[in-house]
Length: 317
Image (cartoon, rainbow, N blue to C red; front, side):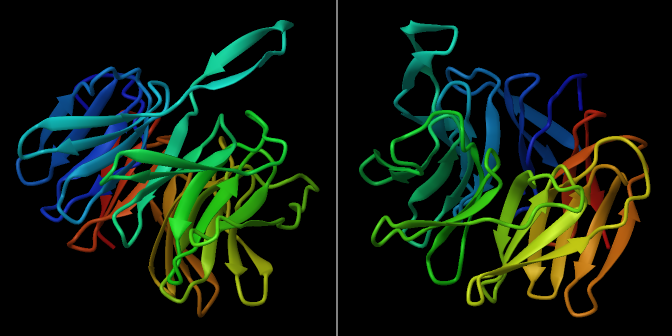
């Protein structure tokens, strides 16, 4: 990157191969062109260094979640035009002074586009799942608890399965959730605790083409598989080959048999083959780079962020 302390987050690749990502350390929406090796860095409107989740729409426009400025953003690279959809703040009693009220951002984290073009996202502070109707600009919010809580459940990752269900992780309570957009009904599933008898810190989530749900855990070396039909979890322990931050974060499912993830402790990209239940590691040349987000490009190569070294990397398997 052109500067230090970029705070690189999750990448997404458009149809031309350009890599998009947020820089939380510099308050940028950024992109990298593999052909010219040129970076473009853009200050989002009213940005507060909070670009977390980012996705590329079928028309190659960019949707992103600005966690601290509390909005869902839309950027059109051809016209360089931003549209922002402001989220309502959350009010909650001040823990330090019950007589006062705090106003917090809802903290949108990750997002997706459904078949109708609606944007779904997790609201970490609001303990809710949000939906943006891009035609009307209206939000619908689905609280995850009754009575509604604040900053307790911390919904984090989100994905869409082949049946149209929304799946998400609750990192605050180690639960997997499923939301039915047709009814608004929400159901949660609790994975088994780790071998160390601690709740799993669930992070990223993906649905593979068969409808299986895959999850990463950032406080263990377990890659989790959830079968919605049998309603059971299976844990696959990734080898740990280094020291430092334990856990798996970034996640991509490219086929029912091929799962790709970033393994921070091992400083590697992992390929998990479902049929053989084996991991293959691709060590990253940069030492102690703390790989986080990962995405696949149109040429089938993988792009990932090195959060500790201000770099983005490409893996050609």
